[in-house]
Image (cartoon, rainbow, N blue to C red; front, top):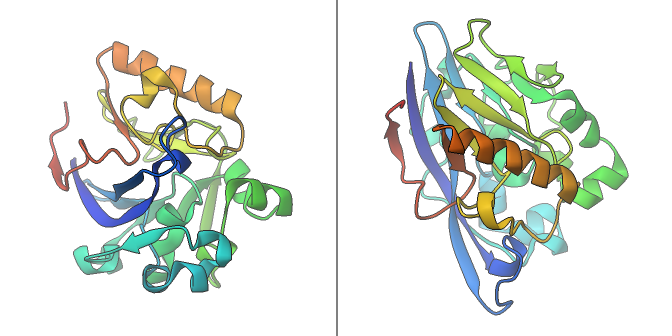
Length: 242
């Protein structure tokens, strides 16, 4: 099994949006990763990055509430890998920087997402609370595979989806092998597992703290836990499985 991390863009905006307690005047630029997991029979993309239309003009694409961000993209996910060979796409959650690139992928490639996330993405109150943008994921002809809770993706224990809610209602992390977990946005930064300085918004902060506690316990047991957007840790390239 091989795992490659892709850098599919950057976000620049006030740091306090993404980490409580920051100076509101401070701007933060952080990467947007996606991951390609390859086995002999599977080629799975974990998250999809940005929609190129949103990169050109976030306010025009998503509306006035998105105009506080500056989005950058050197190459989209479709420019970095052959998306026609993907066997499935795992979405950790439905935020624009994780689901926006769906528009670039063949409709026949199934999307794997938690049922609670998918249903939340169709509920008006949940959409507003979580800053979801349905135009990212409500695409015609798309096949969706809904899972409930922890899920063995290939049926052989090599890749497991872990329900880690809080940041969004059905956020999921991905365990690859025994010693690597893509924590996604349970915490944007590695330090947040300890200081719990989450973004200024969440579906459920208490649930997010519990999910962070679960990942912290894994880290303390020797598992490598990757945060969602830490600029100090998320360089693109092949990952060595511990």
